[in-house]
Amino acid sequence: MNREALAQLFHSTNLVSLSTANTIADQFEHKQLLKNQYLLTAGKICDEYLFLEQGYMRAFAQNTAGEEVTTTFYVPGQMVFEVASFFNRTRSKENIQALTDCEGWFITFKQLNELFHTLPEFREFGRSVLVNSFASFKNRMLSAITETAEERYLSLLKSNPEILQHAPLKHIASYLGITDTSLSRIRAAMSKK
Amino acid sequence: MNREALAQLFHSTNLVSLSTANTIADQFEHKQLLKNQYLLTAGKICDEYLFLEQGYMRAFAQNTAGEEVTTTFYVPGQMVFEVASFFNRTRSKENIQALTDCEGWFITFKQLNELFHTLPEFREFGRSVLVNSFASFKNRMLSAITETAEERYLSLLKSNPEILQHAPLKHIASYLGITDTSLSRIRAAMSKK
DNA sequence: GCAGCATCTTGCCAAATGGCAAGAAAGAAT
DNA sequence: ATTCTTTCTTGCCATTTGGCAAGATGCTGC
Image (cartoon, rainbow over all chains, first blue to last red; front, side, top):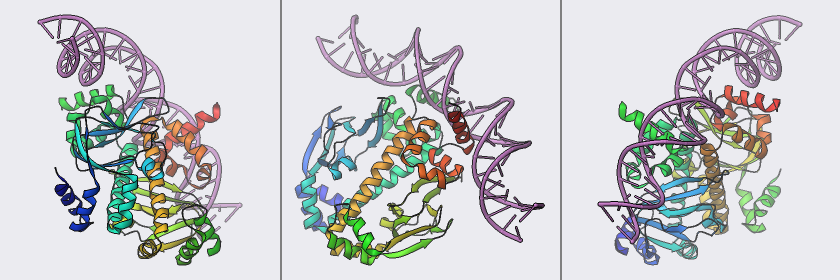
């Protein structure tokens, strides 16, 4: 993908005009990540606002017991960054890692703010990214506290089947809030139906 | 509380100057809610951006099984509104209700945007509200999928003990993702220790 | 091809949580 | 004060999920 296509993508959200989208896209730099490589490690300040073009990524944190918990899976087309660390300039509690070889485009916090300043339209884009990920987190929260593990697995299967091809079972299990053992059993039970 | 005190509060976030805070506060209108009264009902578009000055509120949604699930508790000092509905101008899936008699100050979506436009500093305030609630949702998500019900109850007890005084058990239970029966048992077990 | 390691499955049993229903306690309305 | 309603607790048992360990499968590097 080239910058022109990137601009098209920004424009296709209907949040910015094509000329604005072009100015924005000009600021982004191309980025490649190899499988297992980190975009962000815990303790650092997230400074990259990445548009994921190809590949799959995950964010994970350590819970109080010290176990790795996958908090988010990223698929192509999404913006990848750690919201709190990026905007509050605080040390991230999370890591962001490539599940497969990845390609994308990123800008830094400084650049993002400059764009926000010179192109107020772009703020709408930024806000939209934030609001939408907020909403999807709330939905996941709701499903986490009201649905069974099997139901949550089925939702994921429905909404993001590609993830299952690219992430090992244990990551999916921790994302769903269960152990890999339980997930394996759930799959076994489902295949018997 | 008067507008001057409200301005002080905005200013004390260190995100806006005192004069900006005054201009902002001038736009807010006072609001009173009686216990059980709704600020927002599902199906409507959230159009009030409310600073909660006194009292306690909750947001709740219906899960797929049709049961009420409390998604958020609000305590004095917080901004109360449904993020996705307010910013995307979509019908809210959630209800926001007063748990006790409440007082606060609100502006509409239109006013908020005008302020964002005339006082770019205020955008920082708006972004901060969004980013911080995002972060706290993520933490709750993490605790929802990795901690036991008892641990989650203890966290709530520690972080928001006032809530327990003002919300009935069933709301707290659904917020924690368990039944009121289970929560009652957890409390019984704890008091025996 | 083979050693070594990570991944996935399965059996056995334990712990956590839920469902239902009865009753106790507390509040609200008259 | 009495009644009515909501809230909270408890007993009995079912279901869901976890912990541990063994084995099976598959991938990676040499």
